[in-house]
Length: 298
View (tube, rainbow, N blue to C red):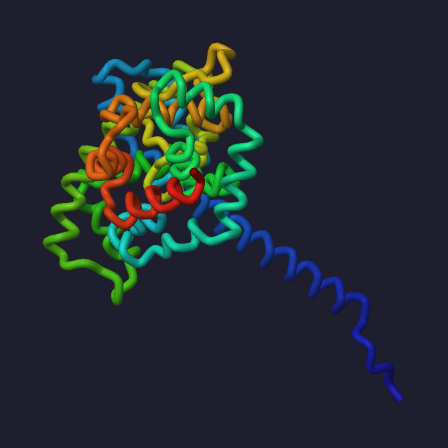
């Protein structure tokens, strides 16, 4: 009876064939990766040129957008076009557990909150309410690359790239095409201004803009400031010479300064408080939640 086990030569041939197959597939995968990277570089080429024309250092800007992690993000930016404030459950932030967490936060950061309240005449309860709703007191900061978000938004001035974002939106969640196009026009201009602010803020504070994580909208840090607000209204609460929105003391001072800038002061009527808080997030649901939380913390 013949041995039914495969011969050593046959085994060797199979191994060689598998190695060749793996090598070919690996090469195709690498080519795809290179093509994707090149595509992203080309997608942002006109942004690079525009930033240089607007005064940003050419060598640094090209190096920034040449980073392999900087890429066009249609999936993330598509969330901008389906977000609905009314669908958010703001009641979760005034639950007993959330209020207890906020009270503990106020105790932990009592000194800087009192200092901010005194210096900016902004209630520490409303500062805490904002941080609770924005990032659950700094425990959820977002995980999207802010640079990618804002660069993608700015790139929507290119109709072909806007089309990629349109295709990234689920069919059952797509807005009317005319509504989408109108918002694209607005957000591409807005995104470019925020992109410039992000790079300027990062340069000023010595931060790598590629490393900054935030929300799908490009907001960052414990108070979820947009870069333009970080650049103009964020404050150094711990007096270390830097403005770091991922630091609690800086975040608290920054929120207080933002509200003061928009008109908050002692003795405001409820209606006027509502108007000031509306500047932080243009949502009545959001503002009502903040005031409810603040009342519970007093």
